Image (cartoon, rainbow, N blue to C red; front, side):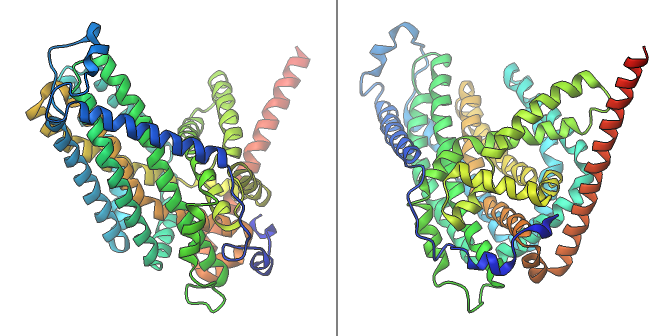
Length: 477
């Protein structure tokens, strides 16, 4: 049970954010990220400048003469389209932060219910435009989203309860929303260069295949860069929330001086390599785990399918042990490297039983749905204008604009996810910390944890009984 964690006095006696002597962690990955940023930045500048106000300014077309098409353009033809996506994404992100205190719960419920419909509508539009690949992709996405929501519909009340408390915590720390806004501006600065280069790629005279490959490379780079910035915010906010819970409030006399400044300094220096490393893998593994859990819970007694899904499930669970979002709280508080942080967090959850509660909670998935909706809206706005101006490049501009919107909205939503992860870590470390902060919430979490542990125990008993009966029947035969 969660009560087996360390006591509040023990936790406060550990070296925390303001006291720990920090060492540089995962320096190799920090070097890889910075080198990647430099190389991609140069490539983006070259691609954008090559067709800025003059076709083939840098004579790149001579290297692609075998795959030339007769539809070249200029960078400035497409750059304003990405400005639309950036503006819409920023507006949605700011709206999220502004409405966080009053309408966050309604916004998250809206995201859960609207995403399937939105994906289905875009799929129909893609088929109408004879974009069959994208039509199928969005249709599959809509189907998977629908199946996932159906599989976790009974978990949503508890999920919303956890998210409400995360919002409550964030609203009590207005400075963390300022951090989110600051990193949004940093992301927008990078997106100016990124969209400049990508607009140059879309304007190239090479075939669609060549353009798509270049866009995939630049999108992977943007995803990693965006994930790094989001996780920097994650570490800063997690550290602040953890300290507030440990010390019993933002105004407590035991709170260390300038905790936000110190969290920020550690996040962009000694812990930056760990953030870069974790950002490469964590998001993909989390998403895969949510989908597998949703399918696994609805399989029933199909033993063949259950066996295959169980294999994937245990494989992903092994990866989660080394790549999970709770590592960022350990990084923020104790300054560990990423793999050790992820392992320690997961072992803490398993030893206290809180892992059963985390497995039941869908707060991360709900926040991701809100981020996806923001990205889809940004991509749709850019795509509609592209359909008017350059109908042959709609999917290129629309899909890349969607990624821009997702990252910008993600920088706003990550503050709530950070608060939720810190709450779970504190609940596992010492449930009294949560009880002191919000007694009603503590009682509901404790009750749900008891129910989930009972459910797991009864399920394990059923599996063992079924296997025993099968073996008995085989012996009798």
